[in-house]
Image (cartoon, rainbow, N blue to C red):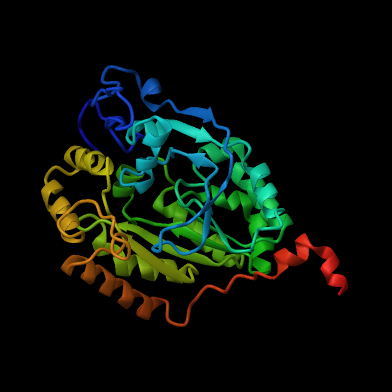
Length: 352
């Protein structure tokens, strides 16, 4: 960990970049003289959402819909692309993203209302298209569990992506859904190196906990994909084959990856983080990231932004292809069952 005396342990971002949408000026080094309790304090803010299901417009993301019961994420992943959504709510993409968590208490009610609509056409909905649905706030508010209960009631298919072993709390529902091919789980595993994990993703489950989560889900018959995301050249790209072998042995049915991209304020946040944690590697890592994104740290090109291009990105893709051939041959996740939802919503149709 950084030896900087002002380093805020337990947080990923160490700065609050200015919000481009208002005139508030943030201190670049917040809380330099504050005690640890203030540095680590998290504020939960109730918001009144109008809808909970969002149409996915990006061709790079599988699935047509996503939903997020929380905005902001206490996990503190320093590279997180969702940080750039926090300024829309009036906050910074930096520490604010980790410390000001917006809670959509009406999410289960909104989900039920949408699934009851005559216009709804069944399609798998993705939990955590933006922020983690099993982040620490979920232990307190249980919105994800309540939404899973609604989905099970309607026999509606869902996919979930998380870095938190808290998902095992909901095994009772997930097992029932898996028995009817209604759920896929993705566990994001960025690194097997616990020292790197604790710096990159300070409030996520440990690598060991996530491996145990993968093993437990698979043993319970729940389809599990592993997302090695993001791959950061110069930090974790050497782990691809080892990680694929490890998670395959634990029962994972597939593996996928993304290459890090530093859009918007994330470039400033990540660069600052590198300077504090890996100053000797900062320039090398940043240059490798640029080489994957046409010379830029960020990338908005559909079809390229998540995988990158250029020599380093191609080497990463080649290693992932080899990993699938060696460790995931003849493995795949089962297709979703899209038929039960209509039967559940219109039970009278069973009479015909």
